[in-house]
Image (cartoon, rainbow, N blue to C red; front, side, top):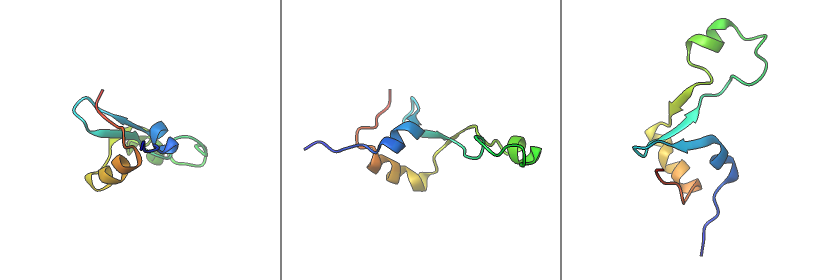
Length: 69
């Protein structure tokens, strides 16, 4: 029996060539006028980051057919 993948996870996660999982950092989509430059820029908000090892298992469980390209 085939397993269903979570549609929300499919949209938010990509896999690198080495098999690591990457995602975008949050906080760069809306309400940018009231956020300081420090909040928006220096901390790498909205940039690509690797998923922490503690969350990798959870993501792989929600995406059973995830594999390197």
